[in-house]
Amino acid sequence: MTLTITQAGSMTTVQDAGRLGMAHWGMPPSGFMDVPAARMANRLVGNDPDEGLLEVTWSGLGLRTEAACSVAVAGAEFSCTVNGQAVDTNRTIHLQAGDQFRMEHLLVGVRAYVAIGGGLDLPTIGGSVSTLVVAGLGGLAGRALQVGDELPLRQTGLRATRHKPPWLVLKEQTIHVVRAMPGPEVNLFEPAVVSQAFGQPFQLTQDHNRQGFRLQAEPLRYPDQLHLSSSGLVPGSLQVTPDGQGILSMQDGQTTGGYPRMLVVHRDELHKLAQIRPGQDLYFFRSG
Image (cartoon, rainbow, N blue to C red):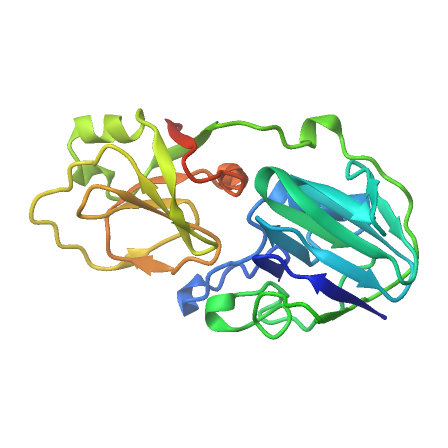
């Protein structure tokens, strides 16, 4: 049995927990951008927390099911309907054969996660079904989903109804704070520049995707006559470019880079970055 995509949105991909331990081959981890949200969606339909699901970015998603199944939405808040009738996204949603599920309007955040009870029946690459669009691998044909795509289901049937805890419902905010530690090249910068990086707001620009975020702020003074060899990058690495601005590496980002790494966001804070909108303030709180 399959789900048919009737509305694909601007960027909907299959993601799971990702491909860990392959960076030495140049393979980024990919996987969920917002781990707690993705795991919550899976729990609402009784799946393993790291099961593959759909990551929906900015614009909504439409599905038509061939068989009865249960779905759940977590992360960014959308208004959702089944056959044109509004449904509660704070609980498991049950679909019958032929039902049309639609995510209509984005209300809060950027990325939502849609889990299907029983999971998707897709081949793994490197132990993961995560889509890495820049390499054309994983997910469905290594690309973002398109209208008319059919996703095979591993199981069908309705699951028990579960509810989303109130504290995991995403709230509107315009200021974001994440914990970060000094990066490997932090000592190449003057102490005042380091204090500036950990004290001033940065804004996410329109140039952002699963590979990385370009940030804008009061320029950080770049070290004079600096020449570095390429070195390893992990998601959350903030590289400072010669113009004094920053590039924040994300889940599909390259595994090496040649700019100094001013700071690195703590791994358990990365999910917060997934829901930041352009123009909103981002602060790095020094921790460690």
